[in-house]
Image (cartoon, rainbow, N blue to C red; front, side, top):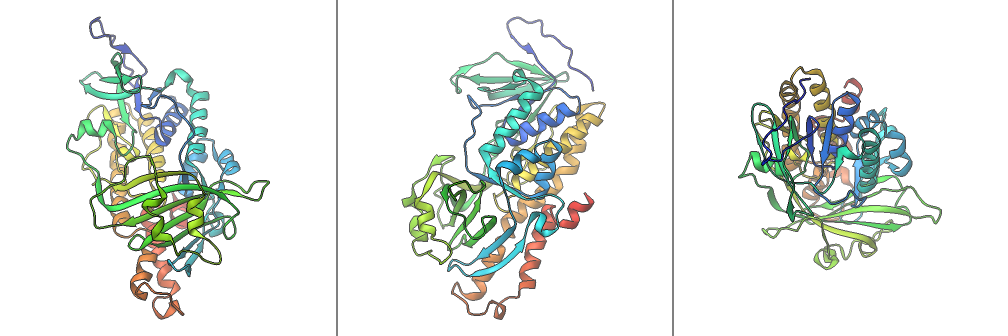
Length: 428
């Protein structure tokens, strides 16, 4: 790899010489990429806008293809120790009736488990791993990207510090990679007119400590976005007191342009009435909602697929490249695959720009397909289809409306497109 050797001689510019690759964004994908590049002998520094990296947030499900990537980074044992292995995926209508269920992870024949964990806990594991390998000087917080400019020899990055209140000295690097999420500042520089796509679906995410639901290892989808939907799964092992931390997401589609804010504390009054009568012999949903230790609101948004991710010495990865609806637990998996493929292609190329091109050629088409599939045929298409066929009423015999084989085909189709069918991972 050609190393950036130019030293700025213009004192007025105060451009600091820095390691070759700047990773903008210290989230899951940015840290995974930094670790992956380090393991391949490539220097990188992570620049994170937040003043500090804290273990906050709600839950995340790591599908087998996500766990495969994290195992390659040496984190599998730690993740399994503090997360919950998902054994079953179960679908219910809003009346609490079982629609369909299937084994997941090791129980489904995968060589790799499926694990649910607190997003903050996973982020913390990646952060500590990156610090131990790269050193604190290569994980820089309080660096909010304000813009960049590139020329034939490198990229000049402009940052703001003090939580965005003051300018920092510009930093000169050879290459930059935007891993800064759905509201990516890097992507906004490349596509100034870029906007999120919001179609009226708002979400509220909470965590509640309670006794295990069902077997304590089931991922549950109840209802549909048309009449109210809940996604519920445990993210911590059962403790000595017999309880575990359970993650839940309330989703509802409404004919309105009113959009939830980002990462703002939520109010149960805004959505709890939808679930007021969701009390089953196996779960009291209103009680689950009221018991939340943390409650945040989000809009469900994505962005239209881009025709191009790479511009010279700058490229995009993860949600900065392909933000997708948070359905099917696939966003994190695709971002982690991005990180591995990008690290591989950079390390193998004589010029990282060739690595960027090879990475984009490999990753842009499949992620574009997943963005479109998450809009039209997500995993909860099972719930939507049953709701349509039954007229949104309780049923006596579901087979009169749709067979279990047909529901399985809907589930398998999503796995094939998203790249985590058992056979697909076996040959990957």
